[in-house]
Length: 223
Image 1: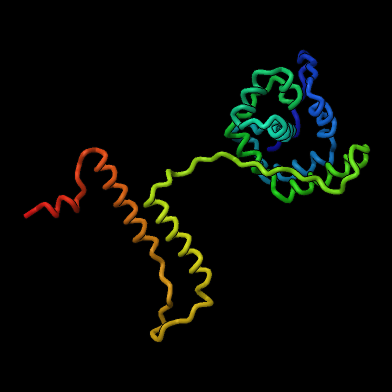
Image 2: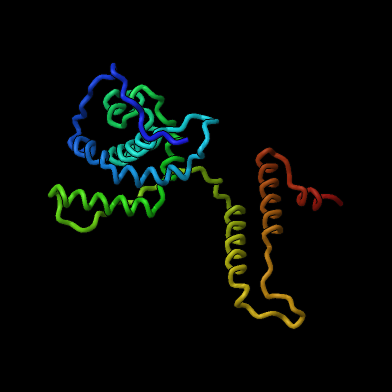
């Protein structure tokens, strides 16, 4: 099930933002073409069922994404600022509904596909020309970096990543490599042995930090 918009409660206060850019964006984001572009991606994301958790309105995700980029907030900051401000609640049209969690907002922003963003940029350029805001033909935006959890870059893990990537490239180039006389190919995958060696080094490192010696060092000390 997909929800387009939340209904505005009758008792929700009228709060006008003091940011002139947000004032201009408020009516631009109401453009039905822009909304339909975003909605098409969310229609493929949400399943047509009434079971499970209630989805977030498409308009709220769309406006929170624009607000976050305008203010240069992180996902956690966007959640906190919108939740604590009636003005931002009214601007993103979430009203008295629960504000999306920062992890949910991060996930839902990725639903908007890259080709949709290109079409949104083209539509924004057309709107800017139609309202005599600019005479340009292209709209350029800065790319954003999304924070995500990664494993700690230890030396053994980086070596394993190198073996894994090289094996992937060799697998793609296998059709171009010659075969030996016995029919065997020149490249073999060493991912399993490299993974075992990485895990073995990790166990030795943990044992060393705990004050214990590695199994190999113990074996050398035996008479």
